[in-house]
Length: 191
Ligand SMILES: Cc1cc2nc3c(=O)[nH]c(=O)nc-3n(C[C@H](O)[C@H](O)[C@H](O)COP(=O)(O)OP(=O)(O)OC[C@H]3O[C@@H](n4cnc5c(N)ncnc54)[C@H](O)[C@@H]3O)c2cc1C
Image 1 (cartoon, helix red, strand yellow):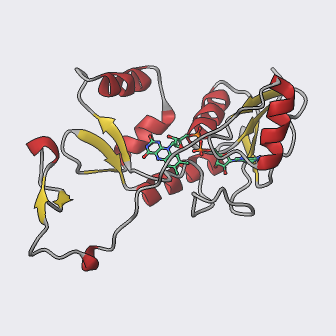
Image 2: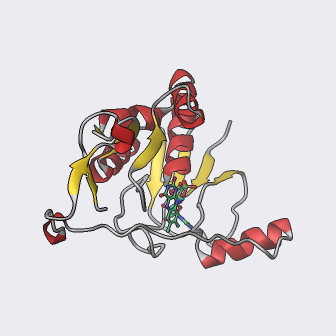
């Protein structure tokens, strides 16, 4: 196969690029950050988590846990990096978000089959393309996708969890606990 262009070095685009590269396929991975931000991402790193640092339950009797186990069995790259950069979170898999993104970026930059190009893609390119620009796709590319698909109603709604400075928490009221009383007490619970 010729070169594959992957648009967006988020979670999906980074995984897609690494999977293609592993199979000997050359990849041009386009990422608009840090030159242009999405409004939610704060770094220029690949695979940045914009909100919760949790990937959900690690228990295989739970749908989310089973999915992650299947990803591992199938050779998922990001799940391995997530496990290498996990933090205590009871029965869930949660990551140290900065360490995780830096590790993904390093893997991508070191892969000789991947060229990372730090620019915004404003229209769907010719050739083999994976569009992995996520819910915060830039306006120009969104417009191009709308024209291509004939869909005028692409939309996305979400909220972002605030990140709270630990020094600002009153521990006369809040206390350390564990999620669902499982694992170590690694959460701050504010009743
Ligand atoms: C505010 C907010 C809160 C969220 N909270 C959660 C949560 O708590 N838990 C959860 O599971 N999911 C959450 N999500 C959903 C989350 O975005 C997805 O889980 C995940 O990030 C999607 O991965 P992705 O690879 O599709 O997109 P992203 O990780 O967003 O990656 C897309 C990448 O494409 C790049 N890009 C966009 N347009 C272009 C362009 N034209 N050219 C080049 N690069 C481009 C972006 O910069 C970005 O790096 C939230 C989303 C938002 C917006």
